[in-house]
View 1 (spheres, rainbow, N blue to C red):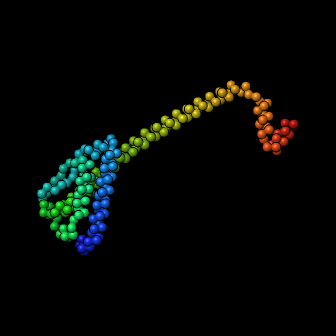
View 2: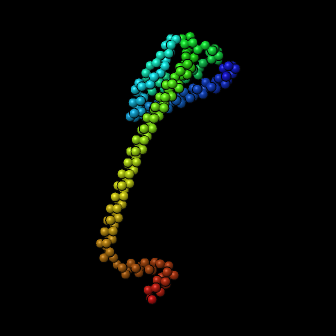
View 3: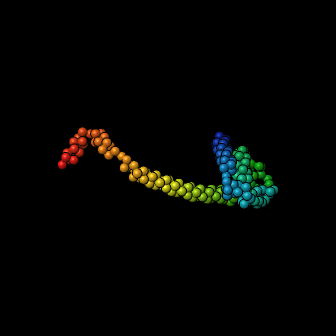
Length: 197
């Protein structure tokens, strides 16, 4: 778009980049606020490298995942404000380019080498936490099932014991007469004929 001086299309791309950066920042903050255990440790510890421009050279430094993602978002927002003239200038000589081009160079230098591997690492840590949670939830489910089964067996045993003790006190004649009278007439006739034989 910049090569053909299509300002409207450049503006659309810039808005998309800014929107994506805003979404990444929002999700990154939400992930940080909910992080626990290994994931929270990963947010804080300096374990990943990142290349930054110092004058006319790239230098590597260690940094945390929290800072890497925040820096990526900041630089993506800044890169989206580049003008067409700056973008059409083919010079990418370190130390001689404007800040917006420095940010584009930073993203190109680090995205596949350092940023995406850190995202892959944090996803792996989330996966470990999910697996641990699923193991705990399975254990709780099995314990709950065993407890409920034991309670049902105890209730059944108590009920059978109660029936055995109260059987002697039941009024067989009255109960069977009421039961027989509550049946439909055809069934009563069949029962009567059966017991007459």
